[in-house]
Image (cartoon, rainbow, N blue to C red; front, side):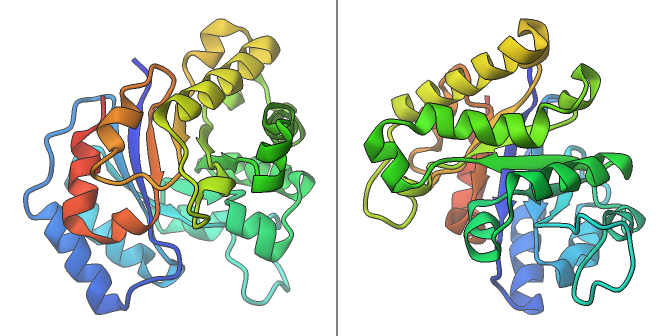
Length: 253
């Protein structure tokens, strides 16, 4: 069975005290996870060491950075390298989040470079893709997201692509008042898996976890995660509430 992943994206939230309290609340009685179930905390850079220390000793609990540089090292003030993350023992890195694409103009080409350097340092990329509202309304979401995958990932070998986790974000359903249904999530996830299968073969495509990143909550996670091509979620706001995120972990297949 593919890995089923509950990934918490804290974004730019919480003080150090609040971060420690949230981790304590979630880890005091950690969920007993099956071998294919994983929990990942994507925390702000200043909290990576704290999170690593907290999850130490808890099976199948991991830490992610929310970004990394496409450069190995050098005069890039304010940037964080994949090598730095590796040296901290960080296992995952979120790349290509819709906010990074929109606010920091990260292109598919730059993201391909980030994917490469993350893999070079044994980090597992959680690669985000998804379409904005105007693309969804035009009905061209499938081809739009397909280009994101092709331009950032399809230079990878079959062995390398299986080290990637994909997260689909329907940007049009985040903070717009519009809601993506579980069926819409499944429809896009199935398309993404077909795109992967066309490039790498069905066996490879079936091994890749695809997460859903569209306003997952404790109340809807079970329905969304029940879909055959949905392998968990990349969770924003609900991951900042211990009770909600615990429900989301419980909803993993």
